[in-house]
Length: 167
Length: 308
Image (cartoon, rainbow over all chains, first blue to last red):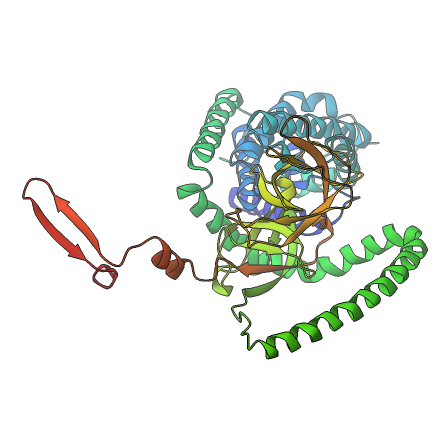
């Protein structure tokens, strides 16, 4: 039971990292941050909060290690976003649209934090050009992905077919 | 205890992870990407790169199709521009062939030998990217090492290898590097630095010439300088966008790099310097070294062969 949940989460993170660094690393128009989104959506599941934070931290660390930016930058940001998600999830669980908007708002916070902390540590150029477009496109893309996949993801992790079903 | 009742240990866990994250960032800054950090990067790449390679087989056609769809609107204009460029290039090619023929003739007349030492090259596919860094499918097992210069198939400078595992490597483009690049504009040496948060409309970098003697003009080509420790001299980097005249003894202007890293599908990694060991031996290590030990007042003489 627990092992299966861990396996599902682990596999999801690995798939998200691979898709993020290959497909979405190549496309300039469609640019969701899948790895950050997993940390956000995990807050909606019955997984323990410490585990959610741990998964967010580790997935951020993997992204840091695969890229050229400062190690720990994304780990800190993803953990912070996951923490805010844990604290605010009750406000989101009203419907599919609310969840998507909530995920988008949290992604916006994450992107701003990455740019802010990255700038403080002299990493602004590493994060690519077009900060304004990144702040708009990434949260919008995550809104769309969350609207499509959030209920399925939560049902898969919790093994509960009734999770996030709204009239 | 992965899926039990919600506990209220989120805050202590969050603070602990934040502290660990900040410590990691501090270590990375202090170690400048080397040491344990470099090993961690290589290890992670070694684990993830096989999956990225497999994914790239499916991803590449999708990415190309989507790119093509987004470019279809401007296809007609691009086609016309490329046709004009092709005609221009063919004319230039004929001129260059004439020059090469003259050069061959002169070399024969004066009995000159050309320098046959060409740099080793490794052609690699770009299989992904994280932030501004590119992930390529060649690594240490293919002769790709950290610090080697990377160019595109036209010979334009892209950047350097930031980290490498056995089967993949990460390339940091010059447009994302925090280190300035020493370049040559005309006869003047300058430093090319990145411009953070530049607009999406075009990649631009700042060129600073601190010992400016003459103005630089829009369209001037920017080449890597012999003073650069990261690149061989003479590689094209970009072109000057605006005229600039010296103010006091310095000038600053904008440069557009020839390469947009986001559009790259293939890169070429140069094995440069060609033979760093022998180069260092020839220039910096004397034939014999003398070591004097003060207490015993003895002198030992060693040769490079003795040192192994």
